[in-house]
Image (tube, rainbow, N blue to C red; front, top):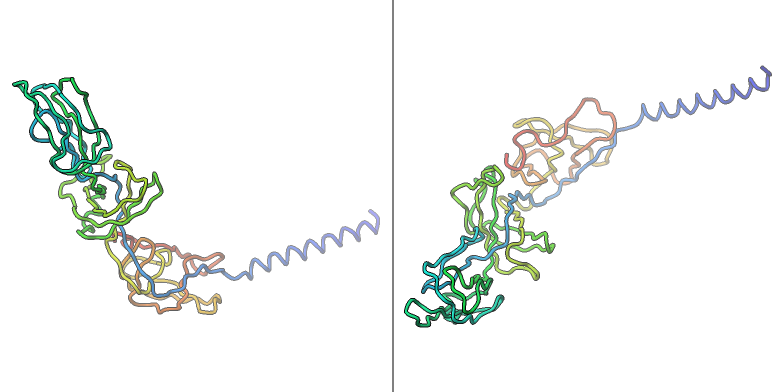
Length: 311
């Protein structure tokens, strides 16, 4: 091998050694990069999620009888109505979608004596269905009238039921039309229903106004606010280390350097994403929520057992 070739190979080897040394030194001396959260006064909110539908407070069926039959109430499943003897419908005075007032004529039918009998609305509402035609005989419903008063019927898990109370604020979302509106809890079921094998309790949420485009029967999701603390110091759940009651956090210095201290903290309200800290931090502290790089000892970030939303 020629002397010139040896010189080239030696130069290449030297360059490789320098590059590898630089990379190794950079890896060995790399400081940990901290993901931090600055502690400031904020709000901690705990919610319970419940799914159901937007419904009417009442749906009445009118047939060949003096009194209507309640088909459904507050989003319950409609029960078919029967009125006994089959009678002939003489006239129908309303159409689907008509608004009616208390006392408005709905239809007439011939009773057992061949006399026309008038059937009038017992309360104001909107005609939802017309189920037969003039000249036909029926023992079932002729028209149904909805109250047109909105109610949100949702079901909360048995694990969340003890957190619920009357008058709690609820935020309702209708995915079908991407609409959000507000309501308040007015009723909490006392007997569990089995929904997909899970015990759940019906919760009724009263709403004053529904958004444009909303239709009764649309799927609804309610976020019910069960606990709230305003203007408190809090950290993300991901900042907590250890097990209750000895919960800790890692606190970085204000300059963002690598010095880290372990601080014992006392937890207050546990929200959906933040947890109140009643002792152990002050406003302006930088709390570590994650670490990129090597650390002296293995640390598992995240809420300890029992410190979650329902803990």
